Length: 191
Image (cartoon, rainbow, N blue to C red; front, top):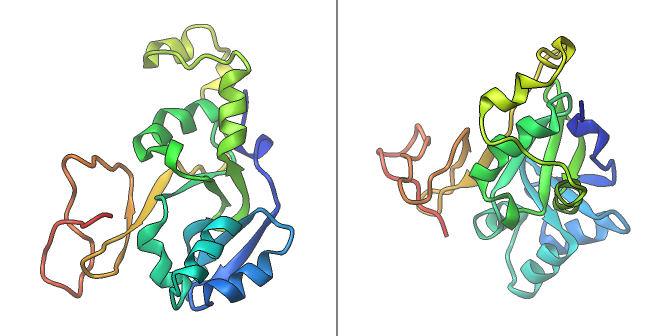
C-alpha cells in the first residue's frame, strides 16, 4: 500500500492571500512551494517561485488577485492511497497543476509534487482499469484505512465574482454554478 504522505515534500511555506507577489517571493527563499491560505488558514492555491515572479512582472497587487490565473489547486488527505488519488486527481487536470496540497485533519502537512506523481507512474506502477481490479489481488488489510481520509478536492476562483469554489469534480465542458452565496446564481467562469 502506497500512501500520499510517503510521496510528499515538507518544503513549503504558508502565504497569506493578502501578500503581494514580491512579498510572497521573498518568503519562499529556497522552498519550492507556496501554499496560499485565506483568513481562515484554508489553502486556496499552490504557487511556485515562477508564478510569483510572473505576477510581480504583471504588477498583480496581491496573491488573491493571482488565483484566477494559475492552475486549479488540488487537496488530498495524507492517509489516502496513491491509487485513490490517481483515480480522482485526473479529473482535475493534474498535468497543469504543480502538485497537490496534503492535509491531515484539515492541517497542511506537505505538498505532493507533480514530479513525484509522474515518477511514481513511470516506475512501472499500473493503475487498474476498473474497481474490480483494486480488490482482486489485494489483501483484506488494503480495503480499509484507519483514521479520517480526505479525497482530492479542487479549489478554483470564479473570474466573474472572485469567489473560491471547492469542487469534488470539474468538467470543463459542463461547468457548475458558482458557489458564491452573496451573488445571483451564475455559471462558474474559468480562464
